[in-house]
Length: 121
Image 1 (cartoon, rainbow, N blue to C red):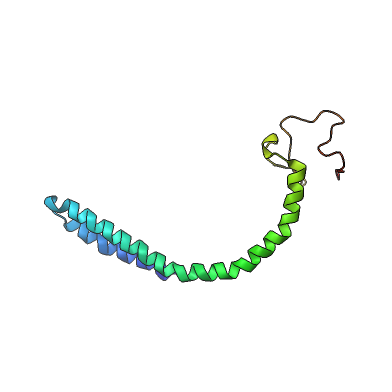
Image 2 (image 1 turned 30 degrees about the vertical axis):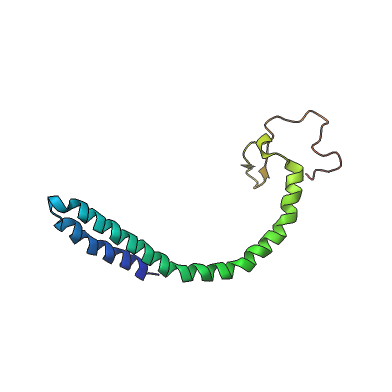
């Protein structure tokens, strides 16, 4: 992984003399050479990174699937309790570590979000 920044630096230094040697009439050609060099550099970086990204995807897929299976029931319950996130302010963290969601328009006294759900305090 440390060879990657070295390769980028070496390529950038190799392209600099091309830009410096361009005459006034050849400025457009110098810039096109720099552009072509940059394209080749980015293509080389992408080709070098592709196997690492494929390995990472293969390694992470089972973990992400397990996470999604564990979180799905909790997110469904949260969705039934909250319904529309636009009705709430951004979450706040209290000094004791609790996270609260405040409604933008408070409920009327005695009104509950779900009649059959109990709120744990």
